[in-house]
Image (tube, rainbow, N blue to C red; front, top):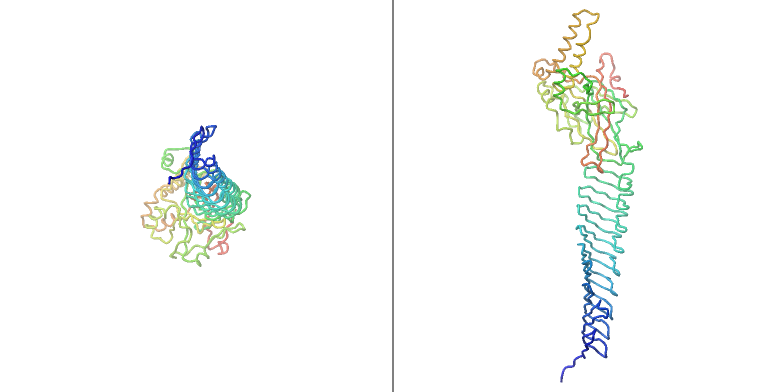
Length: 507
């Protein structure tokens, strides 16, 4: 018995199998407008089964058809954009699960709803950034995770392609922010743990801390007074633009610096001896808010053996405006670290102090420079500070002496005897020579000379507290704060009580 075959039909538009005068089976149909061409399975005159619909220009669909509609799994290619989709279709639309490879380089794998990304999906953009999470109308919307090209990672809420709601951001530099977002920025309550160690917990507005620190304030007034040789403590606080404390600030690193007024100005006469001293000075003067510039002066941190001894010897700046000075610690008492932050101000004791300590034999009286301090709850404290003895051949003091010599040389002798004027000039020259030869005198046998050179000169000095947080918190460092430190000669112990020696007014 011969096998049965479906009748074939050849016409201007259709070539293929037919049944009951309808296209049925496999066939090729070219639409009258010549824009579409279909080749594949037919049933009862409709595209049904597997087929390929080609459009003029090169775009096409190949996959399943049901009753004339694109329905089921298939592959769609758009010639004008280069996009390719492979996945589920319904009524000719991308609907269900599928993979879209965009001509721009982006790739999406996930759920579609009538042509739009909707539901859960995974997106890789043309820059290589990835997002996995919820979508709505083609946009990131709901909960999702984003990995950025620069290494940042975000996990949290999204609304219409923007970070919004609660979210956690891990920055490439190690910083972490967790809290509320709006319009892709920190907005609302949140906590930032910065890579520098700074921690801010509080309210944020448009990516910046609301009421965050804007300045450093030294407590106790603009002028502090302390007796020569007495340790002192400096307390500082961070304030916002309204002058309020910022207890939410933690971790900023503060450094303390001491200076003395630079006596050399552009109007200062410059004889040969003074000009030579100026040329030897390599340090650039630091401007201050007091109307003059300063040259750095060495500062030390006085250490104590125990908490008990420390407590009895601290000098603290009280809120009442007074400074409490401690009594001198007996010679020979051992010292230990003060327990302050381990980040130092220069890597140990200055070399000239080491030399003086070695030659003098009084090693217990020499201490390291003060350590940097981290802010806690908007406050920091520099404990047990002392101005160090002047270095040998300290240029600024030599300049001051040279200026005094020049002034004395121009002054008339006055009504006094000539012997007195000669004696005064000789004494000034001797003092200048003695200061310029400190190093050689340290090698001598005179312990009295050594002790004299271990004392800071009475007079006015400047203290500066500046921020050295690295990297700067939110890209900015706070401006430095200044205070005048007035060193007074020590009181005569035989004429004062211990209680009097413990009080020094702060102006």
